[in-house]
Length: 48
Image (tube, rainbow, N blue to C red; front, top):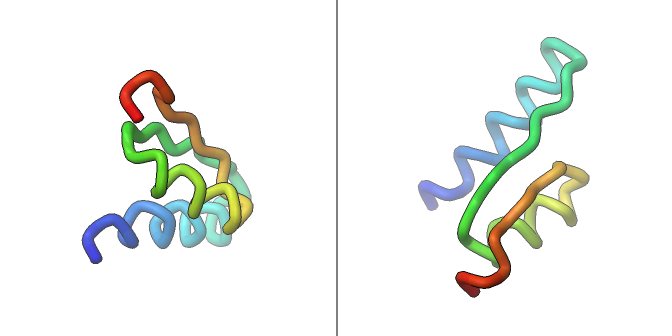
């Protein structure tokens, strides 16, 4: 549940400021979910 705060904050930030953020995470599942929500996310796939 706590992981949902990151994408929600990103979407809120984009709506309020029109500035796109990049999410960095070591959680591959979170990165995939972010991409599906049209959020730019990067991950270190070596840790997967």
